[in-house]
Length: 170
Image 1 (cartoon, rainbow, N blue to C red):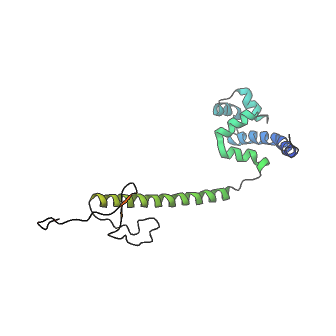
Image 2 (tube, rainbow, N blue to C red):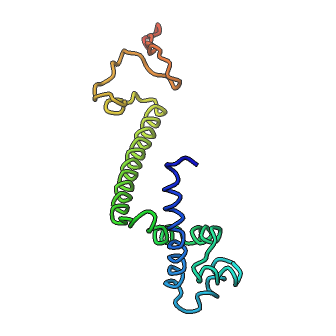
Image 3 (cartoon, helix red, strand yellow):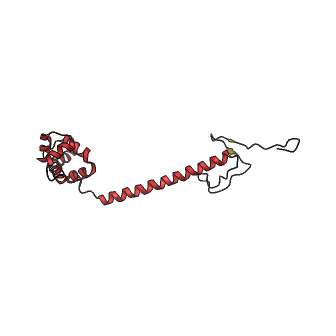
């Protein structure tokens, strides 16, 4: 083991008894009465395992099982001696900001889907759709009516010119 890992391991070893004690405390806060029996039912463990948890001697496997069952509230409470206090307010503000960003992205995607649907309907109706403002980065300039038309695969072609028949009809 490199020498720089030894202090970390020593710190971790010193914190393990505190982690085990906090695990027992967490269980007792959950169930002030009948903790052993309720712990057995909750985690599906033996009586001996429940006794070890409450005696502040939970094994790594039991701590892992508890963490999987109770998630973040348990992990933050039990690991506080190793990681320090968690600023839940800052985490919640960050989550709110991410939620707002996701909602904004979804709204933008919804507008793009609606514009694509409207454009598709205009094309299928045989009309000549107005692409101004719809082209990404288009800056609002109108396409040249005599210019190239985009086909579905991105290839360009010139629009056919209608020719008059001998009777004068198109």
